[in-house]
Amino acid sequence: MALKSRCPVALLMASLYPGMAWSINPQNIDVYGFNFTPTFLMSESYDDNFRELEKNTQSSMITRLAPSFELKAEDRNSATRLIWQPSQNIYHDESDASYTAQRVRADSIMEFTDRHRLKLEAEYRKWERTESTAVPDENDKLNNKRVGGLYTYGAKSADNQIDVGANYAELRYTNADGVNEDKERNTTGVTTTWYHRIGSNTRGLLEYDHTNFDYLESNSPRSSKSDAILGGATWDFTARTSGKVRIGYEKKNFDSSESKDLDNPTWQVDLQYKPRTYSTFTFVARQALAEGDDGADAVKSTFTQVGWRHGWTERITSIAQAGYGTYVYEGESRTDKVQDYNLAMVYAMRRWLDIELGYRYRDDNSDADNESYTRNIVSISFNVSL
Image 1 (spheres, rainbow, N blue to C red):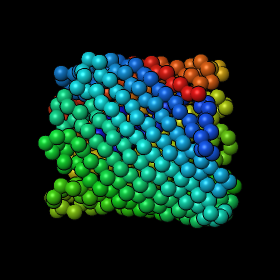
Image 2: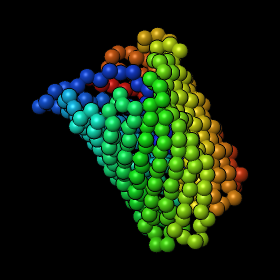
Image 3: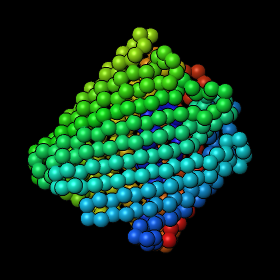
């Protein structure tokens, strides 16, 4: 589910969208000691405004073919996984919007002793965006490379733990004639978190994040350094209730004197309540400063989403989600108010086959000219495994 680049919670929404709520239990194949797990997703959808435009909207039937191949090896103290996910997106009524995407990801978890653990990850993505594009009626073409690691000191049962992490990412556009060159950047981040046990199932936390945004364009007004300090708690009282809350303050200092430095309260809230084993309620809230777009130095984003997943029978599951966000474009006279609703019904026809019917409605009410729109998507999807 691709959202406009104006929405810094695009990855969040993608992870929560009903299309990710499959019930299949894929079987793997032993390949020289590795577990090989293939799956295949095929979807057919109708999108009445895939460019997310206020006027001259474009609609199309869309076919998505998305195989996935996972290779995994694990032992008592470590696990390594490699995933390859190519996909073909066919726009039957607007062939210029069709594209092929690629995603390759590698993860590794190592536990040297009960006090020392290390997580490593690397990812490469190549895809195209049909909405909020720099050139009307032409997809933005992106690729992103990312590596990261997280070292944890402290036993899982200890009163204190410390996480130290680092990551690096490169965002590039491959459109011709230098389109979107002003958005290309390298991002370097470091983070450290201290956890302190304050109960049998509750830990307090204190976190510091530093991120350097280095835009490739000479004298870019968006190059900056961001710092954030957050405090909060994480808990898992029972099988019914779990959550993580972080609240703090962030500051963004721009390299260019043409851009005004920004500061802002920030929070990240994730709550889950399971009154029954087959029913789950979720609450997600975010506020942060995202990277700028459409002429803005940065975007102050505030987003809240509630969700409910309920298993009516062993085979039938429903998913309902409602989200609301406000996006203030710093340096521009513009505020967007976005509503997003998702409904889906998943039928686990076989252990190896899920069928989903989905509907999504999105409404962006902007006070800027020609930036408001509505969008409806109706889809049917099939997820197949061994």
